[in-house]
Image 1: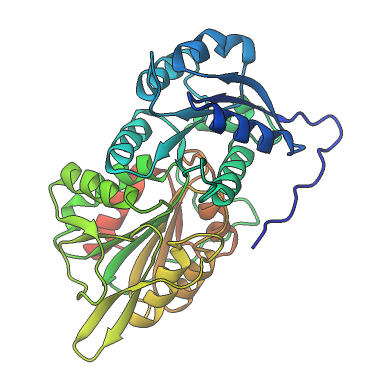
Image 2 (image 1 turned 30 degrees about the vertical axis):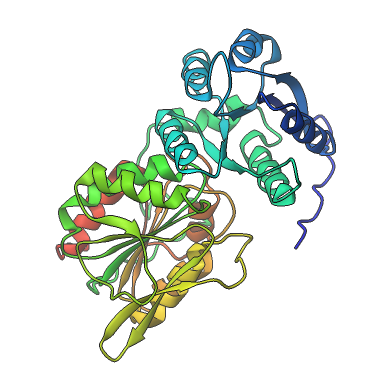
Length: 374
C-alpha cells in the first residue's frame, strides 16, 4: 500500500531542514533525492562522516539529522554524543544495518538520546529500498514536521504533571478506573519507545513476578531481540521475544518479534501466545492493535494497557476494546512523549482512565496490581 502524497505547504510554512550523514555515496544520493521530492522537507547539508557533520552543524541548522552508525574518522555514536552536547533537543534518526552489532549500537544510541532508528536495506541491489524510503520519510515528517525543532520539543520543558478529570481539555475525557484485577500488563510504543520502556520497566519491576508483561515496540527483526535483552538486564527479570504457542505466565517480559504480530488466544488449558505473520496493521508489523484486540477476547478485558510515545494511531482501536470490556488504559502524557500520536489518539478516543508522565506510569501500575484503583 502506498501512502497518499503530503499536502502542499501552507502559506508561510517552512519545510523541515534535514542533514544527512553517511559514508556511503549511494545512500547519500538516494536519501537526498527522496527528500527532494517532498514539498515539506529539504536537504540542507550532506556529510560523508561525523567530523564533517559536527563542523557544519551550526551553519546548516537542521531540524532533523539522519545519522549513519558505521563511519570512518568519527562513528555514529561519537558523533551523536557531540551533536547532543551542542544541540540537546535535536531529533536524530539513526540509520543502522540489520545485524546483531547494528542493533546493539542502535539501542546504545537511543539510550544516549537519539530519537529514533531506521534499518538500512541493501541499497546496492534495491532490496527493501521502498520500505526504507517510506519509513524514513514518515519519521522525518513527524519529527521535523512543518514547525521548527524548537517548537516541536518545547513542550518537553513544560513541567510534567498528570492530567486529572478537572485539568483535561474538553476533548479528552477520562474514564473511571475499573476495579477488575488485570491478568496481564500490555504495552505499546513506537518513536521514543526504547527510552520510555526503560523508565516504565524499572517502575514495573516490583510486580513482574505477579503478572506477565507484554510489549509491542515498532522495531524490525534482530532489534527486538536486542531490546528484550537490554530490558531484562535492566530489571534482572526474564525477557525475550515471545514464542508461538507458549503459555502466558507471570514473571516474564514478552517482546513482540520484529516483523511478526504478537497476539493472545484462550485455550481450554489457559491463555497462549500467538505469533502471527499476517499483513501489517497501520503499516506496522508488529502492531499494538493486534495484541490489544486479541487480549480483549483472550483475557475477557482483564488487562492493563499502557500506550507510550509514538507516531500514528496504532493501539487506539485495541485500547477502546479493552476499556469497553472492563480493563484499564493509561496513556503517556504529551509533555514526556517524543511524539504524542499513539497515546494522544487513545486519549482523544476516550479509552483512557489516566494520562500520566512516563515516570509515574510504572508506580501507578504497581498500585493497580496491588488493588489500589484510586
